[in-house]
Amino acid sequence: MKRALVFPGQASQYVGMGQDIFDKHQSIKDMYAQASDILGFDVADVSFNGPLEALTETKVTQPALFVASTALFSLLPKSYEFSMTAGHSLGEFSALFAAGVLSFEDALAIVKVRAEGMQTAGENQTGTMAAILNMSREDVLRVCKHASLRGIVQPANYNSPGQIVISGETVAVHYAMEIAKNLGARKALALNVSGAFHSPLMAAAKEDLSAIIEKTKFNKARVPVVANVDAKPTSDPKKIKTNLIDQLQSPVLWEDTVQYMVNDGVDEIVEIGPGKVLQGLVKRISRDMATGGIANQEQLEALS
Image (cartoon, rainbow, N blue to C red; front, top):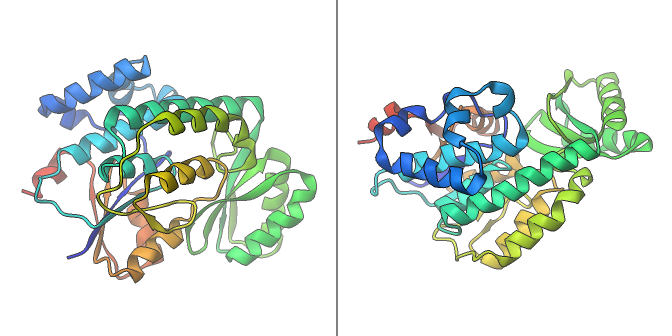
């Protein structure tokens, strides 16, 4: 069986995530302690106890999700084989850890800089995001082009057929929502986000992110990582660094990523981390694909 592992991004977090494996495994307690030292805040406390408002802050959400996902991955049996990895936005860092490209400490240090930079960029240049439902890629691109007369707006996440997220300046995004509805989109939903992620409004976060990525050692991937920016597999450290920097302001090609896996003969896609968001998207992209999820101790025990 050919298996791919995928890792969730922002919006999969919930208060209590990871607590069951933390309580049961000393190795996970050690991971959380190490993470708290790197981050400068108690990531276990905010992950397990909230409040949700604190956990939803980008500078907290991203590292907390990374730690939760990589902790689960670290508990997989050694016999659990996989042929490739991918992650949605922030999840790409978990995917790189799973593929042996980055150590836990190095990946988390980069995630910290990325999360803080994205939160600051969102605070300094207010933007927003919206989900456009039941509209083709071509039509969404046309909508964004037209709405660009009012400001920056572009596709940010190609999540699945008929679910595309756009991102940009608030006025332009709201105008794009109006146009989309007038052109027959089933829904155009404003998202509760702290910034215009995966758009040029994240430019301010690029310098610090580039600096830490460039100085960090990236290993050759043990299995290919399918990148968000081009939905192509790569094991090359140089290319992976470029992809991560570009990802900040580029659309996440999730539909294309899953389609690549389908075309490459993957039999099962397993989501490692909190929630079931990616499993739902995979089923919308490929109804016949076998999916699974490992989000807690119970699901880990079911593997053995």
